[in-house]
Length: 116
Length: 116
Image 1: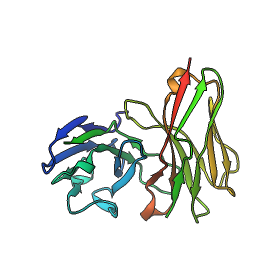
Image 2: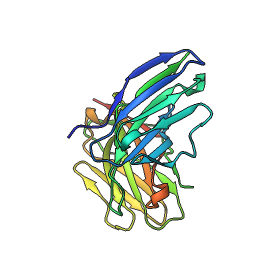
Image 3: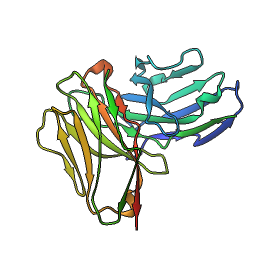
Image 4: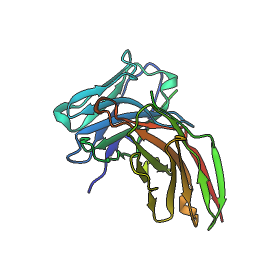
């Protein structure tokens, strides 16, 4: 079974530039998450999709961050304009639709973003 | 809101010895799920073990086991016969059964070093 795919693996940009990250979840996984992991901290949820609808985006800085999941499969996360404090690893994860069963989230390898 | 606390930023263990990583959490829910994830330098989060709160029996997966104390809201991970490949960041995570609030909530992590 193929895992969660993310690209690019690394990105360096200057502040005020824009950047986009791509994620392809495991086939059949309806739930998709984007997490931000700042160095030395645990991952923090940015946005959660159920199919192509947003379930939770309460911690997404909407003035500069946006995300979409067209057709309920692939997803992109965009930052425009980037700030120095956006330097972090951006992790994508997916899981089966929760139906009362114990389900785990499967993670991609993440994109390390450095804003200079 | 549910919070997860890992009070040990770093731990070290001698190869073949046993080490225990601590995790506490705060919640008002009676049913939930708890996880331990491992994050090696490759950044890929890998599930180590999981526990359903309504199960009194502690979960075990080969050399990994947990001590789940529901009343104390404690969920520690024991690694027996430590191996060099166990060196990584370990994150404790909480997941609510609430459909609209079921993202993984992570602690800050514990960096485990295994000495040969």
